[in-house]
Image: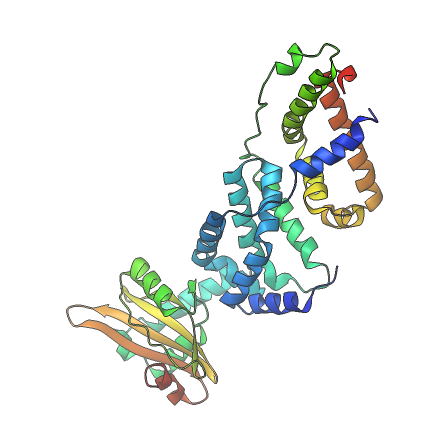
Length: 187
Length: 180
């Protein structure tokens, strides 16, 4: 990923301490930072804290960014670290309707399947929230940003092959947990 | 289980779709960024040296102001030293109103900040320093040929006491802060 000329100018401006450049960088990346923080934490107020901390780290450390690697990768690493720093404060989502699935686990009609699918959708988020931090982050980066295995590998510090096998393992774990909740015959 | 994979992929994409940051983030984060300048000063790459630099500055300031009653008694060399360190702001802004509000809120000093011609000087920010126990607002400017610091102390009952520190080529450049 190559820096565009405008990005280079903005980053250089930030390194010179120019307020306008800081503002431009913030405006350009705030949605991306907030999205990852929100999808990771599942809590809007925690996401704001993470996003704020990320930008503070970004502006404090931008002098050390030389442009040799992708700025986006560097930013993603800051976000990941901020998310992990906040993990103890993160309030995990509680299941919306605990026990509901237990009541409807009998083999169902198509209408019941629809109910089950709707319920599984609502449960998926809590299942994601129950993943270990690194696995949750992989899923969040993969599906909020559409990052490739190579990009994910650069951010997480491992090979694309490792990312592929980890994602496959996570998918299987998610499927297993969802099926265990819903009953294998219902989907 | 294979039947579930397409649904799972689709559902993950839907549930984890990008969102727009709330307007409140711009306000809170930007305020935090503005009020935590020590982090941004580290952006110059001197984060490791920062504690040592801070200690040296404190030591230098202590020596500088040891025998001084007020800011008008600073020597030319002392003023140049202050101007040299003028970019060590505690609050970064090029907006006179923002700086005035910051100085007023942090130091209770109401500074009527001169707005110089943009070609002559650019407002950089402010910090608060102590001169023998007296709080002084240091307003930093970057000039075409150096750096200037406008020092403002509260002096009761007369009002404010102003002094200008300058480092660079022509010392008359500092006059451009107030005299266009």
